[in-house]
Amino acid sequence: MKNSISLSKRRIWIIVNYLSVLSIVVLWEYCEIVNSSKIIKSFCIIPLLIVVISFIIVYWKTGFWHFVHKSINKLDERELQLTSSTLRYSYGIFSVLLLSILLLFSVFERPVSIILVVSLIYIAHIIPVSIIAWREKAVS
Image (cartoon, rainbow, N blue to C red):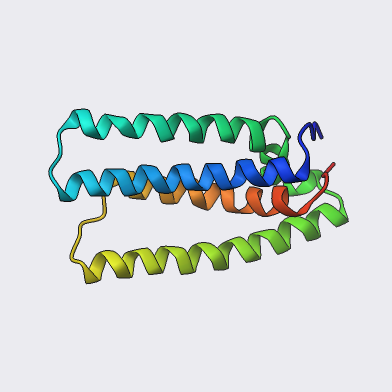
């Protein structure tokens, strides 16, 4: 594992990543509500670049992304337990998040945008990686 950044810096980058995704969705939805121009919507590129940069730094370069997406046959007993418990937590967190968002959109009678859907798919993939990167000093 190329665990090149400290636990505290990893946590900061994880927070930056999630806040950037949130800012993309909020900015896009706000632009949809006020019917702003495509030029204003293009400002979503800035947080998107931050998402990409933070993803590379905290998930890709450290190897956490590869660890979580490894075949079950290539994991030892400790790694299997770690990924199993992480996926359980991730499923619970994502289920509550998704249902809360859908409830809010339903209450306010807003259509679900493709930006929100793509963001939720991305979040579903990074929650398990984030939990491991947040908690573990290193993984093999």
